[in-house]
Length: 358
Image (cartoon, rainbow, N blue to C red):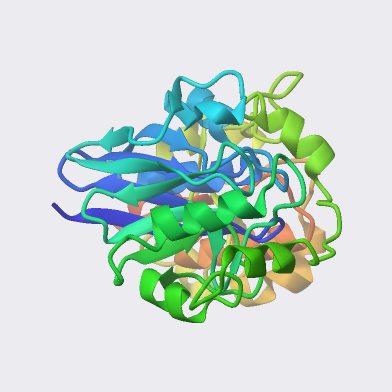
């Protein structure tokens, strides 16, 4: 069965989030979601027509707050993480040897303590890929100097649970700070400077005990939040949708408004048409009350637009107006959206136009 797979990145914490989906059932799961990226990741899940069944944690993170609780609230997904992690609020507490199914596929759970007591590695059913969290990194490993860290435990975890996988198995870590994305069992067996080759446990322990790493910046916020699976102490923060119209957030990073929603909310909006003058006055027509500012002039003329009213950008097909949204966002506009499908869709769905030809 074919697998849908996406590797997503949070630049603030250098965290990788992994989306896996079963093509037949369209069921999916997310590994290590980040709170601030929930809107982005949810947009991708919807665009790929997937149903999110689970969010999985490789461990209780110290560098970011998980998006697990927010995904459960928004999409009804279950939360799963290690029983040994000590977190409250999970729907499933995992232990070594468990499996987590999504459609006809599943992940095998392997306990890989060392960074924390509750670290897990998730292995795909055919052992073609594994998600190692903060246990094994690309040419490195997670730190072992806080949160129940243990060099001896990590050494045993890597050697018995990860290096025993097939040599071609691809390994995906929870973080990378150099822009690297994937490695393999064979590569890490040979080239990992901390754990590869003939390096013994004593060598590894000496290496790890002398790293001299700084205290994680977000640990005092992240760990307490993650021990509650990311549930905030107050009402949902940082994730509310705009209230001025029914909008859809896209994976490309902009808000879209559908023609019917625009028609319903149009009285309180400012519509900026970014086509050329000959198009604005051409056969497709235009929306009543819209203001013409061609895309090439928009950055310079953004000061002409009232920031107190929500703005909808319009063009022929929705492509140029998507770029117009980006330009206005850079100019400081917060309530701005793109008309999905542009004037072609607006006209095709029978909404009122000014000018144009039948």
